[in-house]
Length: 164
Image: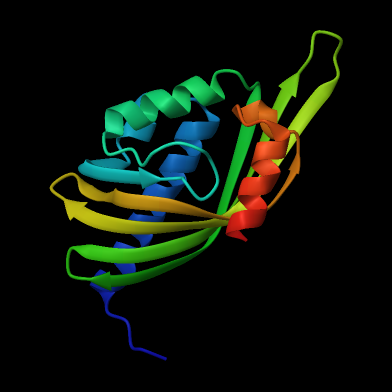
């Protein structure tokens, strides 16, 4: 096992805190908190799971996430098993993701969509602390109705199968 110094442990904790803030920002629909997670020089690549382009504007990305999640009553993003390979002011990090999405109909019935996979992060240390410089999602499996996040069911199944 590699010997760890105090700074590496502090950096690991700080990076994990950003990941936790990201999940909390999404689930509490706290768009200001969510924006604090992203560096100004930024890239979000969700093309392995969702149709569309890579987004390189953090403000636009927050707007996209707000638009998708505003149609959903509740979400829970469970992000675990953080791994951080830190080199100076940069880190290659990864984590497991399982996100649950719920929408209730007027009749009280519920629809669910669960997404499971991995996040890959390129983290950068900024004067304001660690931030996502780049992140991408790698899908493993889904369950439920992908239309909850704006994806037609057949298209979602094909995308997940293609990338798994």
